[in-house]
Image 1: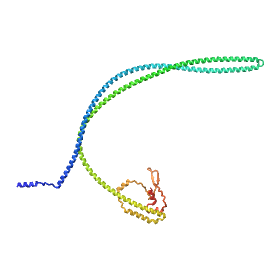
Image 2: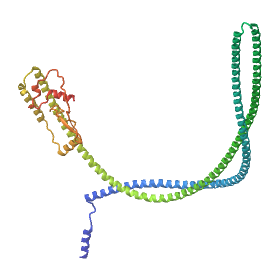
Image 3: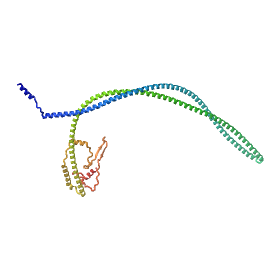
Image 4: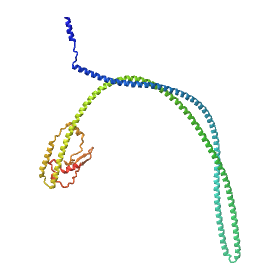
Length: 498
């Protein structure tokens, strides 16, 4: 009994070795998914291996560069240290030279100051002497001017005396002539001979007296002129001597001034040389400080390189995190592709709607063209009838035919209904460029325009429609008929021109 039970259990536990279609499909799908995942993982693994190789190469390059940089920095440090030693030696030598030059310059400055003070004292004394001499010359000049004035006064007095003597002689001659006339009048007859003798004697005496007076005056004038000339010559000689002395003193003062200028220039040059030496020492100190700063910078760079190595290791760890993020990003990309597909489908639907709307608009344009052609034919008939001068009552049939034809044209075409929301949006977007009465269907009415403040009101007629010159006059019965909805030919022509 127990053996039979075991056999039944073995039969129940045994399964069929073959798989169902469902299971095969499921396993095949799993295999495909696993293969795809393996392919992706292999590609990502290859990319990561490639990145790791590049990073290792960069790391090796950085290590090589680091060793080169360290060697270069060490060389620079040794060179800079040697340069600093040389510069320190130069600075010490320059400081010694500066001290020696300072002592020399101080001695020279003391000597120059002593010479300058001595020259200043000498020049002040000479200036005082020249000032005294100039004052004396000024006194001589004033005395000369006084003498010249006196000489001119004497000349004027001599001229006045000469005029007086001439007047006296003229008066004496006059008196003699008058006396002679009187003498001749009283003793003309008796003493004619004696008169002649006396006259001759008197004339001789008068001539002698005049000659003596002239000689005396000439002698006096000559003496005074000789004295004045001698005094003038002496004064001119003295003035020439004083002028020569002034010139010599002026030349000496100019020479002293030039010497003072040269001394000042030398002092300025010495000061400039001193400043140049000080600037050189300051520059050398700055060079030393800059070299120390460069050394500090190089040490900082070395520390930064060590930090960079540490950051490399941290970035390698970050790369793995970014790889995981890339897997999630691929999933998001798939979702976005699905959304794109939906957008494309909606785009195709919109394009089909646009195509249908275009067809509807083409149909509407066709109906409008037919209506326009009908109206033009009616206008041509109206012009022909206006040429024949027929009454408006005869054309009612014609108007009815035109209206019926327009109705038939409009009934033929199907006008699609537009949603109210779409119409309201279009009306908001479209601005009205036409006003009431501008198309010729209605008469123009004046509009009252008010300002913002409401003070001035001005009536403006919008447009004055000018009638076109028609070849033949249109009758008023056809134009001014309110019962018909057809546009008059004149208004239609005006509208087309506008």
